[in-house]
Length: 443
Length: 147
Image 1: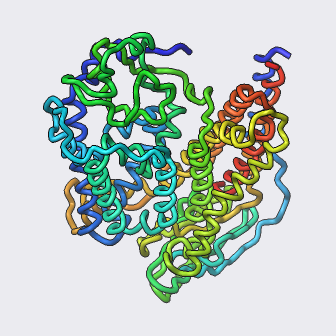
Image 2 (image 1 turned 90 degrees about the vertical axis):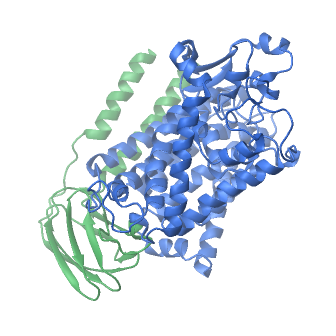
Image 3 (image 1 turned 90 degrees about the horizontal axis):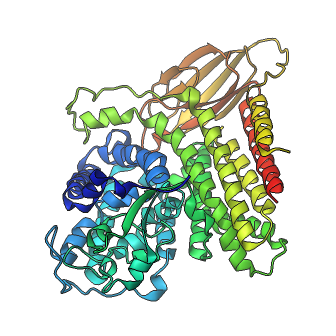
């Protein structure tokens, strides 16, 4: 399938170039986000009846993992409200033309942090506390507020969207999985960028701001770090930026050789498996351990969690590829072949989320009518009974997602292996084994 | 072999693995009773196995707060007050693996208070693993055909 340039359609191009549609969505999202913080802090402590839990961890999560990431890549980042207050303060403006003088410190992020290791750590920190975070409204409220203030603080110290690019726990995996999405922002003609004076897409101009994600669009080859903020479409004086529809997982044909990205793939794969066992499995002791933060059982859980992610999963993967005949260093083979785990991990999350979301989606109706759990009945649905949805098709849908993810992963392994001139069989067998474990955990 | 023909063969094999009827062992149905102790946020025992056709009685005993038990796939439920027990009886006429879960808000981890009932053999799990193996075989064959 060839690429189709969506920005060729005047309506889409105009909608993306104008700041007003995006601002309208931003404001709605920001209001919802602040309401989720308040609901978490002052609403009912019963998670399944609190807006913050129901809308963040059921509604938003379902939209993110089942729709936004697979089909729109970083589409969520394009409308995420978290960086907004910091960015507005940093720019000293909301919509007006940029002022060239920096408002705050405007420092460059130190080179040692210009990778996704901090995002890996921030995700794992949340993951280790997730049983509490997912179920306790005030903890969710505090974490949401902390993310907002962290984004403001980093905007005050560093240039551009340092929080989104280097710290956001969600942005890390969205970036990783956005490589599989059938949508991309790319330049049309490289030569135009080479000869372009001033590079306004990166440095900004009177038409708009330099790339908030610290990316030079002329060098974009994959979606991972492009936040789809559309600023470069506004600043490019040569109309050389396009948003394209493309085949799924086009970026994975160029495997990454970065260890931070390779470990992100293992972190996400392992977390989905652990959550499937702990949260959706029948083993009460695991749930107790995950929930009772600070107890010895929780520390054992944390050690096992990290061991699975950093030792067992990558360890067996390394053992598998160790014997492959190749002149390439093991580290490069490891990082490159781990690309195959990206579609697999995404589909693990889809399968996990289907179960979690379908059984709990009915809480959304009640939370809509009574978001704070104060006895309101705004839309007459406050007393809607809990009822799992579509449980009859859940298992087949999970199988479809996991087996589909395995096929996708095997084909990606084949492409990565061809590029590195090694065999893909070991990676395919590894993927089959972890998929079988995930099937056992979910079915 | 023609790649399209190979694909067709694998799709047909996949359909057989997914849907081919399997022989059902002839086991006489019997009445089975389980006492299930419920506490925040676990059932004990949390995994139950019965044969297809069995008449199953679950005695739910709540040890702390009010708990419920809703059985996916069968759409039946029972609730027990603290310190009390309640009984649910049904015929296990649908084979497979089904989650049962608390259907009354009982605390923070309530959405994850889950157990598992297996009726007969969990064939769908084995079929799914078979499909996964078949998918890997299919991709491997396609790699070899392209090489």
